Length: 324
Image (cartoon, rainbow, N blue to C red; front, side):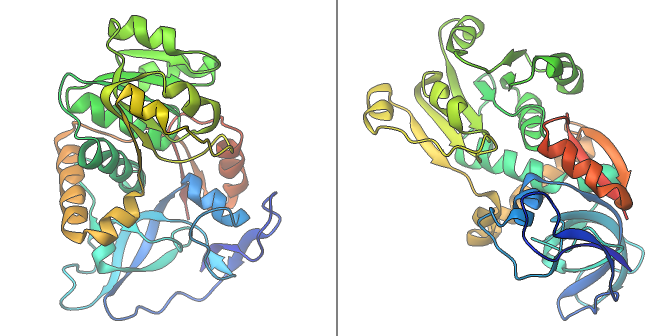
């Protein structure tokens, strides 16, 4: 089978390439899936550089998230050959076949094709864990979402809007404003370069934001500390900007807000019952049509460099999905 293999860590993807590998053997508790779609996530890029918190042994097959059809399954795993499933693991998705733990798979929600199924889990799981489980999101609250052009940011906007929140989508790229507005219809879209607190004050009537969702870090985090309402939460998702920010403890003390780190995958591993409930709720919302992933482009796996370059260069609005 063809697979995208990381042979060596590199800053320029020189250690990554397509290779022919044997179809993986299904282990007990796993399901062998013929992959129809594999979505690209920012951690996939970081893992090729050795910059993600999880560092798999080399070589490894890239890709955290897939959708496809069951080829082989154990009698007691809950799946049968031909079932349409989505899910994944930390690696292995960007290949023609992948053997995945049955507990990491679920049926593709009604109304979603393989492409949307592959783009659903990681982004919306992160958004739900952050906004609802940790953030306690309620209808009517103001939510500021940074990185709103990426898959994780757009998912947070989409989910918050579906749950009745008032959403301010923020991007560093003015050229993306209309594309974001068209994709998820937030209450407002702002450009979060330099000082954006005044825009937030004007939009919220001075109330500021109950939740700030930040996968960017750096200067965006620094300014976001001035945009959180008293009693609110600044949710730390990641550091796409490259700079891990610091904060003086007197700032959340004086302003009465919390800074909370979000590791959605680890949250589900430590609290498996809650992880299962999050998956079920995301599936329900997707099946009802309340949420739907935004796909920037779908590419054959042979064009993987285009997809990785588009993500690294900040060109995308939504998710990149590869078709092996």
